[in-house]
Amino acid sequence: MDRQSFLDHLTAYRPFDTAEVEMRDRMVEFVTRNDRCFDREFPEGHITASCWIVNALPEGARQRGQALLTWHKRLNRWLQMGGHLEAGDLSLLEASLREAREESGLTRVRPGSAAVFDLDVHLIPERKGEPAHYHYDVRFLLEADPAEALVVSAESKDVAWVPLSGIAALNTDASMRRMVAKTARVV
Image (cartoon, rainbow, N blue to C red):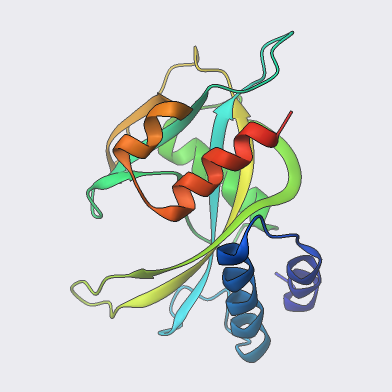
């Protein structure tokens, strides 16, 4: 992946609120000073790709009503899907789509837009053989049909469509609240 092109996208990105401005600025600074920013083995942290999967907008509807979440096995909480970049990924959007398919079993998931939907920087706790490090997470809005069969991957304990109004009861993180709020604006 091309760092300069990614930096151009980051600097053009319009954050939702002041917290996301800070996330974008941290990400720009990290990518600017680290030529290994996409490398999973870089000890300080790395760019990751996630997906905020929402129900396709039904005909005549003005708002989406659900998001697909995974109960992450290692982190033991409900989250959006996503993860590390792999050698065959040509773009962050492609990595996001791959993660969506791997973690949900969805085969007809598609981008709601090619633009970045959300940015987040979060600490990943230390675990055996891996020091604590940061994920500089780039998130894309994807659409899927809630009627399509789901598969729980080895990384998860469960996968479920959750009403947007119920997500805060499952995960109170500011980034989750921000993505729910952004979803209301997307038509």
